[in-house]
Amino acid sequence: MNVIIYIVLIVTVIGSGSLVFLFKQGDQRILKFLLAFSGAFLIGITFLKLIPEVFLKPSLFTGLFVLLGFLLQLMLELITEGAEHGHRHAHAENEKVSPFLLLIGLSIHSFLEGMPIVQGFDIKLQHTLVIGVVIHNIPISLTLMSLFLHYGCSRSKAFIYLLVFALMTPLGSLFSNVLNTSLAVSLDTYFNYILAVVIGIFLHVSTSILFETEENHRYNLQKFVTVLIGLGVAFGISLL
Image: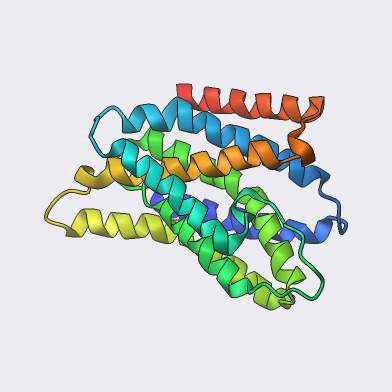
């Protein structure tokens, strides 16, 4: 089952990144709708599914790890400048941003998101996380591929970087699975803390998307409806 999940995660990133060639330069309308939907979906599954799950086994440090994830994401954005939530920030023409540093920041982000996808834990929770990451990765991959090309990477080099990014979530999951089978103590002891960190990351990313999707923090009716659809889909997923 994990192999199928890994394939889906990788193909989603590569396929979404490839779509950048179908968009006209500067046409961000579709991306904005994808961002609004993904942000609403992420915050929906976080509040409806992930937070209730992580606080089923209350611990003094659970809330602290949620904050840690939130702050960690804030630190990563010093490198990525918001690419995790699909934003391509404007830079001066002569300003150079290292695609390699961008890749490192996003790879850490993606690796951490994959860590709670561990065999042996709640299957429904795993599937919810996978769906959340897949939907989240669609606008990220579009933006990332666009940025790689914008900062001077050739198409072949940009696709190699994109493939590295695509492998990070499966590698995070694989890392946790290896730990779970090799450690004398079950990973179950630490699972809630890992999930709490990811919740903090999701909260930061989703709120950033919802507040920054449109200039001046305004939503027109279409975007508001898109957000409602994203929340509705998250609610439906949480009932499964």
